[in-house]
Image: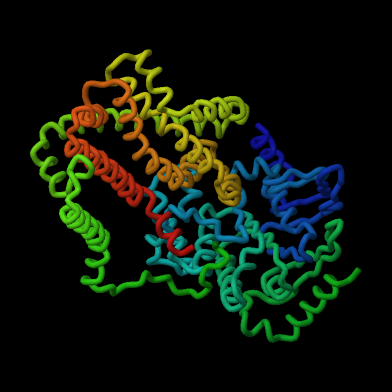
Length: 270
Length: 274
């Protein structure tokens, strides 16, 4: 009911609702009589197809924002819309994919069945899943590994598989929670390059949590900078770097360094 | 575990090239040790001239096994049937109750202490009661075997179903999985290694349960054979029966270990890399 109602409202009033709309969200936890304010009056909009990075010190609640959008947590106060829908309706309608900090592959499934999992859960027949899974394996350069079990793969390969799984249903929104945080510097740079290449082929909006300034600036159209205790968005830095972005050319350019400097200042401003 | 994974982009290859001779030797080592012990016992008993009613020589036991093969096989069949039925019933109840407990915390909190109480009564004490209630036939043996299997399976299965990685559940949540999908695609496979641990314990205890019930009251089965051969002072036959029970215990354990390797192949490998 709510889904169809929201859809008709969306179709009637505006052509393209924001991929994510967070308005005046507060998040408080009660632990042993103490009230902990995790998020205070957070507002953020991600346009359709836009790449927004969320950066901040640890414990500032950046992952909490992502979890609220993904309907893993409920806000204490405020409004959240995902493509014009409530987070729960958006989740049940499979409007987003969540990429965790760890690959979260099921250890008893080979790569093919792990990547095909979202389709399987949506009731797609195995024959119909196969070509889609093959195409995705190719996209993340894992073709030929479809029979491998997760524990036979390296960390970078597992993360690419996790990315492929997130793309199986062509969601209009990707929610990424420090997906490359556990990887080493070299693999991480490679994953950043691949993410942008893959993202260019989709029209998905991305909300990307990171604690790396370089990663945020390289990937994003806008960087939302957070401060801690209580967690809130203190600055929004637009990244006016041309696309497509080439890692090697860009990271050494002065425009890139200028951008990083602005984000760094915002991060350390009190 | 995942954070410590190799970060290079090469697939991890299993070590290869252990020579055939070496692998053959690895297989034979347990047998050579057993054989060595048996030979030393044989030599010692012959040299020390120990009478066979105290400890019969291994070769004598072997002879008894051979000459009483028909008798032993007949009684073995009965005990194996009792133990298998008890194994099946006890584990089925254990697994089903674990699933019920998973979805109903109130049932878990009310019934788990009951299960624990029943478990704390020694089966040896309960077996005569079952004899009184159910007579001299198959059912008291099956019930005793089932009861002895049931509790470890309940505990292990419940632990396996409940100890699923939180991230796996969050993943299923974000993929809008139904409760039955979460159960069959995440909880059940995650619990399988724990269930097999329980089944391996149960494989031996089901046989013990059947034997105990046969001791208490029966006119057939290996437990009955143990009792009568003791009373009739047929020490060689007693030893032969003991050998047969240990052989069926080993075979049933190996059968389950084999099934585990087939059905839970991922677990062995993760254990090896941990």
